[in-house]
Length: 273
Image (cartoon, rainbow, N blue to C red; front, side):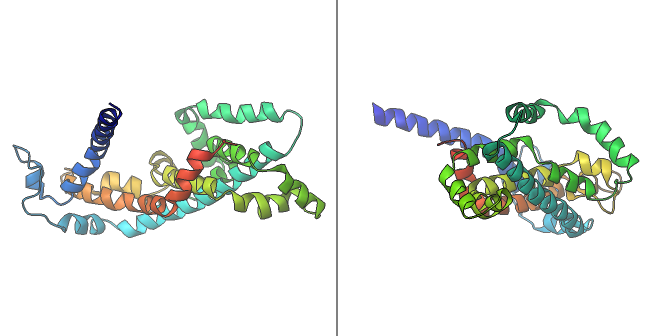
């Protein structure tokens, strides 16, 4: 009875996995198809004549690597800064005491319920009035501000660390900044990995902010791909779009594969004592 139930659970999980991976599988197959095969009726589930021409066009129809470099610069700056800022804020909420700390922490968490679309126009006007459009400074400022969810993750992780570590460091003459950099931050690699993967994905996949704040020569790959794969008449090159999408997701996928063990540990154990 138990074995039969376990088989049913496994079959259900496999079915869910296939359902979730099917869009990516179709995208991957389409990237190797000729445009005529993509429009064929009945559907060609597998390319009859697989080709790499779509990947060549994806790289050459515009400066793919140049725009990828812009995206990578923004994502790297943003992910590193927001990780450090969120870790420092989380340390303060977890280990330091002060009046109104719980209220402030509640206010920080409440900002997660604010839809980003509400702050879109005010944010643009603020950066436009201060002359920061068409620069990467907004991503620096967003990174230094931290993220409520990441602050929560670091705060929950730091509360699980034994107080004896902190007391021993204070006896040795360490201040709070040194305790954070020498003791708490090096011990928080699972949460750091989680923060880097999430924040990199947020920035790498963002379309609205680069489209709103950056000119064409400094914009990101996500923005350029939305308009770069078309014919002279404006018709979409969908097989090339598929190849470009495959190339587009590689940096995020590689980062996740590098940090996956710490990422899974961080998401699974944060907040557990």
